[in-house]
Length: 128
Image (cartoon, rainbow, N blue to C red; front, side):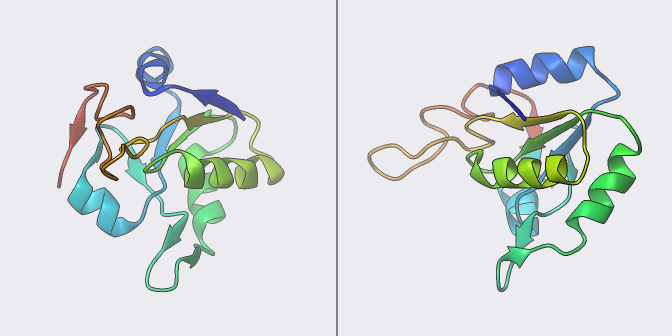
């Protein structure tokens, strides 16, 4: 799995329209925090118990079909890295993880989107 920055991700997605961009955060994060424009939502883990989504693999296979590249994003890049390793283990040939994720690393005040990440870099996102 290749780690790419949010800006590299945006460039990659523009030049590879066949790629599938999956936001694997919880439904609450996806809906209320916002998400990258063009990302589809397939939760890796979700509440109330935060177990791994038993349908994640099936939904990812359906979204990516056969050989489409998959780009994963979460809040900070950690959950998406776990999800990416899982997809690779199950035969996905080309998986990318967005380093620093959508909200990025925490600063000294424990706030996100102040150091790095998709939103920090000013990349297109929306809130539904």
